[in-house]
Image (cartoon, rainbow, N blue to C red; front, side):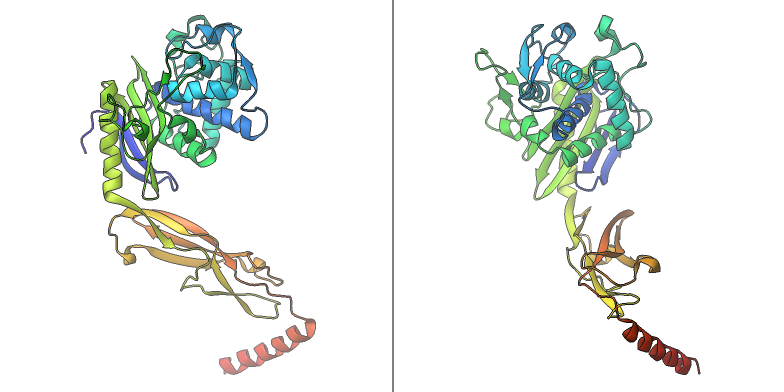
Length: 388
């Protein structure tokens, strides 16, 4: 696949499996794609109860003066967290992003430190670095540039995909915002905020954008500066499979969407999410696990949940290897409770592994001393005759 981009990657959203990558580990300016981390931290604050959607935020002088997309807020103006989040996720508003960052972190620089801490927690690359909530380069921040944080905001394409993976995994409600094609910030506004994401499925009836609308696409974040070029982290779902794509440093606004369509088409045309093992299923190689000191000497085990793997369309069943093993003997002692983890099963396909717990399918009570005594005698004689 030939792409007009400096870096790109495609992953499946539930497993994180990489389906395609090109120069995915070079750190590049992400521009407003870095706002995905701002969105993540705001939604985390809401989920933890530190912030509420209806809470009002007062616009600081800095938030009102920050350059770039937005220009919605005046100094001292108040807006709800929900309204600011809509402005950030639909319109990529820098003023709304700064206002939310200051609300959560006290200052934008403190918030950027939180962004970096979360990046380490998520396992983003050592190159991943944030200096603000917006993705603007240091030169554009002028007197508001951070004092303690050095350098510029940088992400690899893999970092951006992993960030998108986590925000969809932990705060999927973000898609209820990012899928909105346009919305007024205030009801009295003459014109709405128009989403910079031309590929939204919701644009399929838009006379000017319908040629870009992509079936199933409902997010996630555009970004562009002189330094970053035109970037886009997209996500779309079809037939139960959600993909996350990233293209970085394309040459124009339309090109980032054309290149994204190429990447997503490659994924949907060639791969499918295949359930290899269902929940509560027996694994042929380990249907039961031996236990000690129980009224029974073994207990049937089943899978705790299903295992699904992204595979090439038409992959044969024998390409999926399934192996199972019990937990350590110290844990295989009665009493055993139904649902207790007694082993693991691992499915391997084309270098990709998925693991699931094997759990007890029933309770097993501890045996009485009388039962265990006579079982020990029986086992002694069985061993004696087997050894003769």
